Length: 438
Image 1 (cartoon, rainbow, N blue to C red):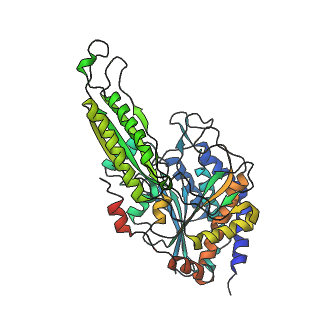
Image 2: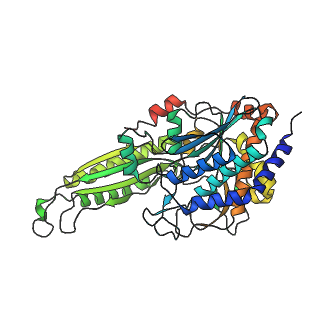
Image 3: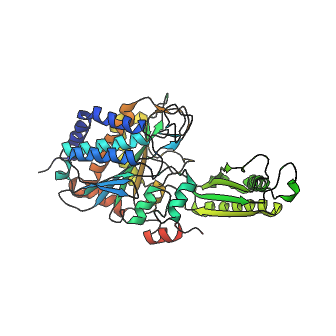
């Protein structure tokens, strides 16, 4: 007779507690050397070294820098992925940023990696797999933050990637083909709040755009009439986007937030090369694509007005997050057992942000919980951890407890969660429709 779910959870949490200092040191090490998407070489090596220490075999360089370690259960009735993200975001004013790249862990991905470390220690030291009827794939995933778009688009044009997001690449590469359920969590700011965690929330999807305006150079003082001002064309395009905002419906949660990444070359030359990056976000795919057409129309109109040229490169962004109640309820109950019911929400209100977990959520049951421990604004210079026990240790426990719920007792609960889910699209439909926006 094997151990009960509660006995397995107690053994797993005890193993995490025994390794508490190692987990915290690992999370802090990731924080200290932030790396941007598809460049997470140090982070990847650190996680590989941790798995080596534990004795887990792993597959490396998945989607350039990703790491996967699969542990087999006593039976393989299903397979659960536990994901953590490796990359940082660009916050050059953050006090702990990389001074060369501006990268900083101002979104808590180091906490995700600490959570994965805790899961690995729990599996090993509590001998969990001998009592589970399914397999666990521990996945360190690259490139969730949708930044450095030109760099990543160059990787795309070179054929090294097809998607800018790491989870999207995992789908394309087929490593998700045998995954039945995905479990993950993300750190959030909870300083001074009674609610310390929730079991997930709907989130916006988006498409990305690289925009290039091409005009004609001329001396800005001596002969501006001989030039075509690409910056003026861009400004008119941006004003056209602003004029569209009243056409966006409130319930669609459309957000368009462009930046100019290049405004010209020299102040005394009429700008002939101006570049913009932007997202078009929304709560539903059809609303995103409708708003995207309006944005393109506005951008192209700016070029037409000035006699410039406008080239728009469409980038497949992230799909909206679809929550799955049966799976979220498992995470909710585990968070309640760890933090108390008064400190936990179920599925919270819609988030204006985005994640490539949304893409996974269209294909298989996904829980993307939010667990506290930080303060300040996400992606902002004041973001910092104030409770590592919550952000690192409680997160790891919530992840492995939810996996145990899915795979213990003959994986009865996991199979039920899987059977209760209806995919929004097949992998083939996803790759065809979302991977080729042009």
